[in-house]
Image (tube, rainbow, N blue to C red; front, top):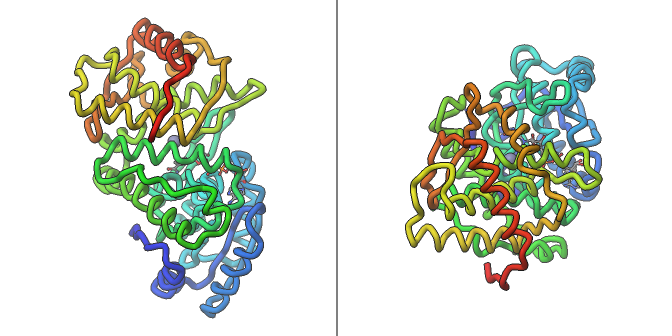
Length: 370
Ligand SMILES: NC(=O)c1ccc[n+]([C@@H]2O[C@H](COP(=O)([O-])OP(=O)(O)OC[C@H]3O[C@@H](n4cnc5c(N)ncnc54)[C@H](O)[C@@H]3O)[C@@H](O)[C@H]2O)c1
Ligand SMILES: [Zn+2]
């Protein structure tokens, strides 16, 4: 069962009281605010439940390497965790993916709960139950569906994130706003206020992040095993993943969120210059596209001039997991909540669209007011 919790500070303790696990393992990032770690540790111990394991790991993609799995399982074993124990993660999406996977196979499935510490994990990775490990060079080749027992969003954790990581994660929130009219990107709370410690900013960010995550949860509730509808969550990701892969070996790799922000900007461009499907934008949707573009430019500035060539991107897009046969399948955007899936790219159409998009992207844009 997957439950959402309001971000008031008692919520996660209440959730634990209800679950009554026979043991708790708390696995978290190393690079977190030590004062906040102490606060959570005190609250955890105040519950009087057996905390069998407390461990700090270096977060990031390295955790999703297959050879990390035995380390995690050894930790579970030496702590005597059972199927009725609970693992709480406190970290970014890589940590929740890897520990979530390990929990899903331990004793054929031990509950897990996530306390996300990045913006990306708070709006996306911690929710929905997909776990993932990388295999060889390829991301998320191995994984399970293992919904967390609860997710607790507390934006105070995100104060120690670099501004670049913080901003990049917001791309997934833009995606959610493009998918579902129930959420508004504006007003977007201030990152500076959060870092400077304003309490009202913490509440504002918690609400903003949770409302965005709720979009994902509405989609997942209708398609928990990704049989169809959940594919709309790939908006901006076909190009985004190709960009991420193509830039990986350069001296300036892109963060996932930055690549997705470019993927979304490209989806907006394609909507205004149809190439993926024939449907035209209505005037209202064209206005929405302008608003989303301005928000993306303002919130997630991606300055780069050495963009990969269309042919290079196409080769990566051909490897996309969503493809069927030789077609590159993508999600076309035609207004908020108006998505066309599956739509298939023709190679020449993609290459021409990327070329035209880049030409305009590199031109100085007029001042924006998101
Ligand atoms: N399961 C899903 O549905 C899903 C969805 C989207 C993304 N993902 C996965 O999530 C991962 C990306 O997650 P991410 O963007 O959170 O990045 P991440 O987990 O790689 O974290 C980014 C960096 O920030 C550090 N970090 C995390 N929290 C911090 C904090 N509060 N202060 C300082 N440093 C901190 C990490 O150690 C790491 O170095 C990818 O592996 C992606 O495949 C999974
Ligand atoms: Zn993503």
